[in-house]
Length: 250
Image (cartoon, rainbow, N blue to C red; front, top):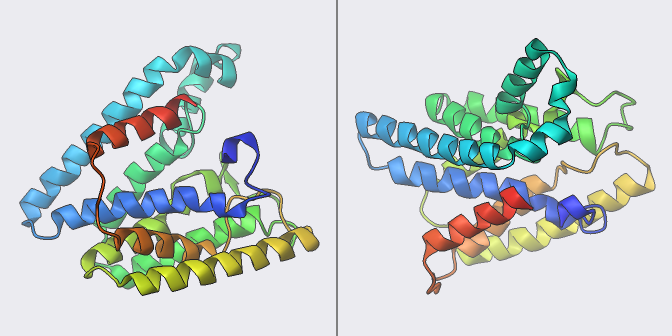
């Protein structure tokens, strides 16, 4: 719905990617929570291998579309190679693929520097604030969109760090009661509605990707649904695979 133009009318849709980062982080860190350091590293390596296989598969499948969309053949080989490296790390290769590399890099960074909890949290929050300023509040400070090598910072791994950090901290604790999820979701939705209203009223945005209130809404949505009993009869692996296919092919 975001990619067909409903994100401005329905800003709650912008919770989709943050919730994805929280879910991915939660299950990764939950899985390694009781393991030894050596076993944790094995899980991390397997996570990277699986994610890269998924990325490579869709990169190959969508390569004809990507070549046309990115106009790769209009450039020299050096430029094509550099654009490919840049797309694989801080941006996208096939369209809308940035979130895959973002969660690989983001989870790896939070995993490797998890002992520096407060520093990582502070840096992650700072990155998200920069992303928010660069999108919904760009006109407020009358600045250009913050980019590195032509890639918008809010479509790269810095935007996901705070939500991966939140997912990691949720995994370290016992499940929170559903009342926190319900209350947080209601409050977060109210704050998001107000924030979006003010952004529109004062013409603050150049893009609508990042809202401050998503820091309240997205974790609350996760807490709410994570508190519910699992009544799913269908294979969760099947659901996971289908959701990936839907996203990467849409």
